[in-house]
Image (cartoon, rainbow, N blue to C red):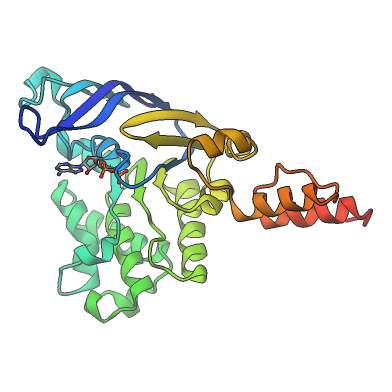
Length: 294
Ligand code: ADP
């Protein structure tokens, strides 16, 4: 069973002069195994929407179904038992990686930090140790080298990996990441994204990534959701979305740099397709246009 969000509404400060209608009638289905990119300007409702998935934000109106879990809004009141899933189990199923997750590291050692979330959902003993070791290795760190070190002594990129390992140790089936590459240099960005892709193959089958970087979502995601002003404006594949110049303009969305370059070459008479989403595709197109066999 996928993630199914039906008629979801959310108002901050409801009933006060500062009420903010942050989500308006959201309907979205995410199938198992998909990699979604979620784009939209700051304040468009992305974080509010996805913090519902592990019940960090209490559902007010609408319904959210995730596998066997179901949450039904109750006007913002505490959910009645029959409308409330087992939150611990839900939080183990849906792993959340917040923006700059390294700021939330706190334990004395890397191993303790990585163990924290899994421990909280009831994992202990050898099972816990095994998960911690595996998660640290999955994120590309040497377990023996880092396990007893303070997370604060690591580099920025390593800290972010430790934070991700802490979520992976809970064995989530669904991974939600809020701008996982924010603040990293180009190499660090690519390493984290390649890591997420590997994690998707090996551990969490479904990934949802909030991003402001169109090149990233074009390259890595199967589907894109566009949020604006609390509404889900559209869902699309990257290829469909990024080739519609007028639509992009009306939604104030930039093209990926590589697609913009292909459009420019095309406009200047080079016979390349405008539907390219990665550097490799553009190289292929240029070689094809020049009649160079590849
Ligand atoms: P995004 O993740 O796309 O930046 P958010 O979900 O954070 O958007 O915010 C959606 C809207 O809700 C914005 O107008 C924001 O100012 C408002 N908002 C977010 N969090 C709060 C809060 N705790 N209290 C009041 N308003 C909030």
